[in-house]
Length: 303
Image 1: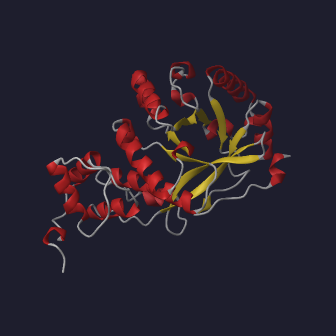
Image 2 (image 1 turned 120 degrees about the vertical axis):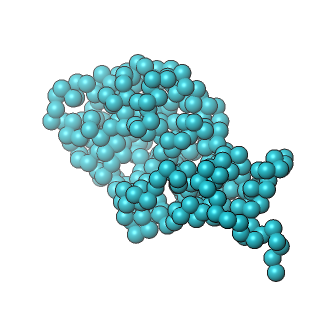
Image 3 (image 1 turned 135 degrees about the vertical axis):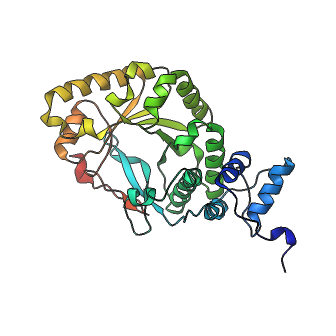
């Protein structure tokens, strides 16, 4: 026998689900989860938050037909000066290691909010289960710019639930968002400061000419910039691009940004970038993304 309050209700609309998650990011999973949370929202009752785990959002995702069968791969970021892995980036993969694009084909405006919630939770949970001792880098979800407190709350809850230190979390601001936000730099600065104040670190992903100009982001106290792959590819063969990158790296240094060269695939690219003063690297030359595991980086890459 179950309590009448635990009987499932009609499917919620996507708008109701999004409102629910915004208002009440913490909840405990159970048979009557959606019903109970909706009652709590309606009552606006004050209560202590409980742990926030994968089952919580999985239950909600089913309400909008989003089957949460994807998982994560992790690609290491190495510090060549220290000859060690200092972070891993979480990358979406299908259940059989299918590329992220196949997963993203199922994501639409009705379920993007839940998809982003699940990605953060799955990344944190898997990193904890694998015993990750480095930083964990997670892409900054598009809606986080409008709801920064919600993103922080959900991620902190997941980190607490799975025992992953929140000070080791890095949020990457994706290129798709940064150019649009460059028109409102005050807002971008506010968001970065908002995250930094709560112990998270931030990075600009795919940094390059598409980010408007570096000086314009001088007020953003982000910790890192990840150079776009187009800047890195065959850098040793293109003197003009090499000169541009040299200036870009000098500006990063002056502004206090730590540069990460991503997409490095050959020794020649690595050696050229190292000569320019880059010490943080990510790419196939060091290790491919490891499906639901942590890749090892051979010592020979540091030659």
